[in-house]
Amino acid sequence: MSDVTENRAWTLKSRPEGKVSVDDFVLSAASFSRPALASGEILVRNRLFAVAPTIRNGLNTPSRAYRGSIPIGGTIPGMAGAEVLDSRHPGFRRGDRLVALSRWEDFSVLAPDRAPVPVFPIPPSMDFEEALGPLSPNSLTAYFGLTEVGRPLPGETVVVSAAAGSVGSVACQIARILGCRIIAIAGGADKCAWLSKVCRVDATIDYKAEDVATRLTALCPTGVNLYFDNVGGEILQAVVDALAPKACVVLCGQISAYDSGAPASGPRDMMKLVYGRVRMEGFVVGDYVDQLNTARDRLRGWIERGDLVVRTDLRRGFEHLPKAFVDLFAGVNAGTLLVEA
Image (cartoon, rainbow, N blue to C red; front, side, top):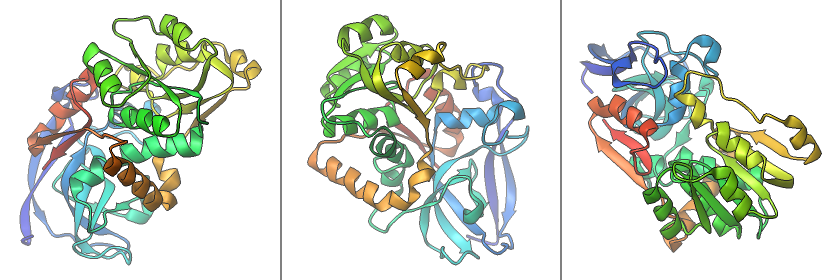
């Protein structure tokens, strides 16, 4: 990198009123000089961006942003694959590659020890697309949500919502690998067909064309043992009404509320959970960073054996980041959505 270069950045122009729009973002470009780093900081070049629905929460007002509200004019944060250009951190050297919570810009200064999401080193054997695709934090989220939080037993019935998404599809397949019966909830006939054919789930529910509660009653006569919840809202309520005694609900995301402008709602009758001895537990992937290598090894092994298929929707061009983000909520992406700078 030369001493002075251009740094492009996508910033927040306006807070979304309901559904997010490309007009809520603005692209800026400014000259960029190599900064003087403080102790513990690193300078990175962002190469590949993961477009994730959780970014939507940061666009809300401070009272509704659980990990910090992005100020108007602030650069959009997001997970990225990046290369270290300069370092004053003992754990990172120039040329190292990593996955970190960075920003939608070419160059970022990060402080790994103060990061709200742990930094994931990328080993030499792995490229950026693999690190943000098949072995990404999304795949790791599905892995840890099932193996550490849900802990289903062989033969149990597992229901997964947003099942065709990058987390949900991996959760379905890991549950199948663990010997469970899988019911996948997704929107649209094409997604349901892909889940049946490629992910090899036992049954699907198309929430756009079918009544979820009615289908769950028919498919799960003895109840649902584990629900991997990515959406919340009315689908969460329908599954809660179908839970077996001593079931577990793994709270991974609340997609139904992200783009609605309203808080995420919970089950309407909490006494059903009390008498059903139901466990509901939320988690984030950073809780398990000490198990990263083991998880990646197991995921890679399943992929190499053909037991696990991970789709990646790779788009090229930094200028396409907001459009990709809007597409995510429209459900038109096919797998983990990545944008190459």
